[in-house]
Image 1 (spheres, one colour):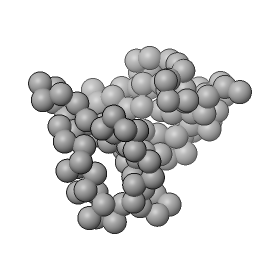
Image 2 (cartoon, one colour):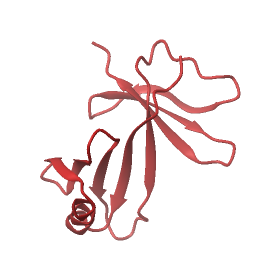
Image 3 (cartoon, one colour):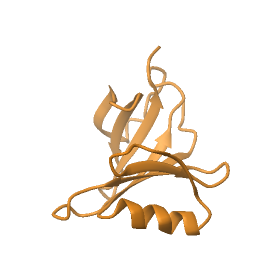
Length: 114
């Protein structure tokens, strides 16, 4: 089983309001806000953008999330370095982290177990 492409882009920022407004001016619509300086925006049928505000002493980062339909059925090729196996998240999914040949970390996300 392979991934189903990019599901989301996860961004951290020092200013949730300004970053959300930036994406809104580019055509993204706010789907929901968490009321603690984070939320999800979407533009059409493409991947969503999730933005979370972080303290000034942390560097903003970008993470691309790849969609996996079934965590239990997913078997990465042996050449893929698994950093963390699928684990339940606090936001209702299961997530695996893998490293590409250049050292970048990628998030693979699957639905939570029923």
